[in-house]
Image (cartoon, rainbow, N blue to C red):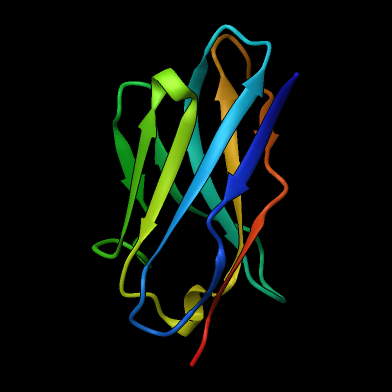
Length: 117
């Protein structure tokens, strides 16, 4: 089993920054891709950014140029640096991980990000 624990959410003013972290723990041979999704009230969960084991990234058009995804394979941790935050970035942010040799996705419990003045 794999547990994903997110941290770093909170309340920030428009234009501010936050850094989310997600640490994976448990028994597994390795993690393939890791990603961040978000779900705003009344909207479907959407992919924000994904990073492969080798470090290849893909970023949603809505956050490109403002958000950066990175990972530390030694720590089984993925990060989301969020800059120039906007009110429309307000959502619960979820960490997602796909293990090596498996197609079963794992999810964190989510962390709230609120952008408001």
